[in-house]
Length: 228
Image (cartoon, rainbow, N blue to C red; front, top):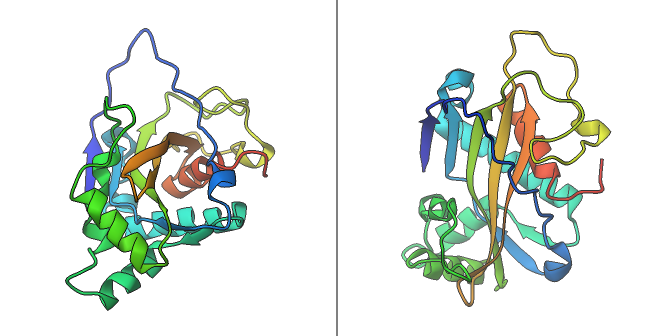
């Protein structure tokens, strides 16, 4: 597990528009058990000064896992999500066989590779297969590969998200004190076929907020568009 601070990026005259967040492919995994790994990587730009909120790594990771798991179950109930606590219990029941979910190195999937299709490297590939088998034999694992908070260059824009899509009413920021910094949460989500080791889905969910948990909540909600 790791917590890192990202240095503030210098201003650029040209800003690349990020790709829109792709919705979770829930139709293809409906009624199937899908293991949801715990988050192991959180990073925030120094300029946000969120050390007091995110400095306790374990607490920040646990809070993030709770938000992700709660929203997945509430907004995509057609999938049987096997959340991190369930994975941990399964691993404890099989010492020496199952890997500890918090120490599986899932952050290696944070950056996309040039391989097409993208393959999960060993030993993570074998660990995912073993863990999925222990929690019901599901074919897929959803990996929150990394969460980064980047300072937004000014007040939140109420008309759209950072990827250019319009916000729903629930995602529009409320009035905030002028000294509260706004950040964009960027949550990289990867869906892995544990039998083949192939990455079948990858996207970056984005949401803005003047605190980490509001931003993360809005980011996760973009994975299931069409809901408030």
